[in-house]
Length: 67
Image (cartoon, rainbow, N blue to C red):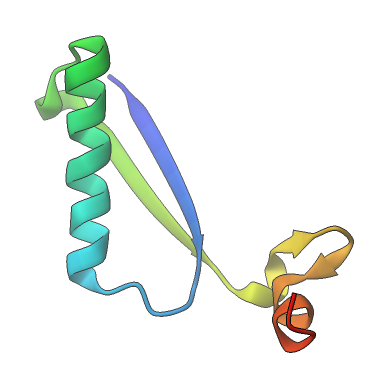
């Protein structure tokens, strides 16, 4: 049973966009590895930008600085 975890910042991904991610990740495993889509699990975790750091700074701070 494949398990895919997608982590994105919580910035307004729509339900339709999330559905597309789930379908696309599932199809990728079918196409590349021949996995059964009925047993493929895809989880989307949305993380607040205050809780996502890059280069020692939160994404919130980086975005405010225009990085």
